[in-house]
Image 1 (cartoon, rainbow, N blue to C red):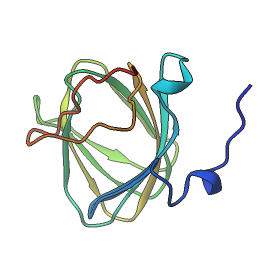
Image 2: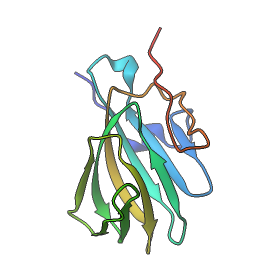
Image 3: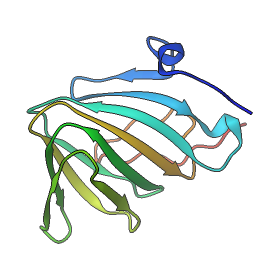
Length: 129
């Protein structure tokens, strides 16, 4: 059994900060459970383009409001607390928070915590040694 709090992760190597977002990695590949879990804060007014070509990601909105655009189809979705989206087809997408948004993200395969988005917004597929 694993019990962990957000407070334990805050300001550690598992608390990744950028100018657009902050991601607290709660469960990573090293736990060996087949997925990773992150609490991510997306900052208001920032445009985020992502493409998880190597992962499936499910996102659940806990706080805040914004807009999700499927860059492949142009389809636009409004996001608010209780919204969920699943990126199950290597979906290139844009997230534009109108207010600060807090989301819970699940990745499969799990991320290791060492990934960095490349110029296309893609996380490389890394594995635990």
